[in-house]
Image (cartoon, rainbow, N blue to C red; front, side, top):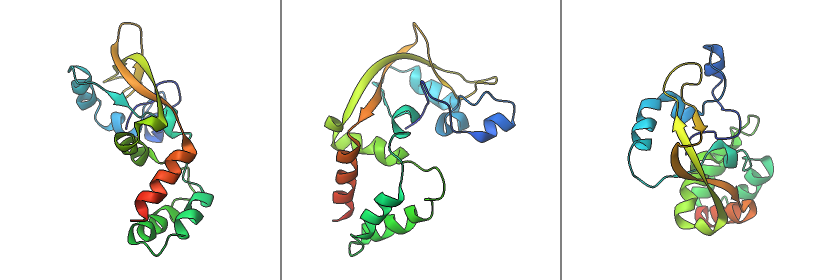
Amino acid sequence: MGGALNVSGNVERSLEAGGDGSAEWNVYWDPIAAKRIWDTEIAIVLCSLDVTNNVPVTSEFVRRIGKQRRYPLSDLAGQCYALVIPQDYYFWDVLATAYLARPEFYQLREWETIIVTSGVSQGRTKVVSGGRPIKAMEKVDKEGFYEYILHQWAR
């Protein structure tokens, strides 16, 4: 989970520090490490803000978790997510890891990208011609994802 290909970043501190707002939190805090991964030949399937911005933690979903409160994982998840409802909060890492079990929920697209390691765009995952080819999650079956997560937490 990281990067923002064709949407704004989510690091307000970047703007406060004179950045351009294009960085995503994970890459912003260690762009050198992200670039090291980009410099390898490891296959990358990126879960960027482009897709996570479409899967928010909503009060409706937290109510659905609450209906499963008899399950310890649902109880814990419901309590934790209830704390963030007033904020803009998304299923960032949960969406990324669910791909491992349910790749059929995701539509991928190939992009050529670089990691910007310094300057006002530090931490940006930038789409550029001739950059490192990666696959990025472009769309997700949102309801399928929500149902899958509810099922996992009811075990």
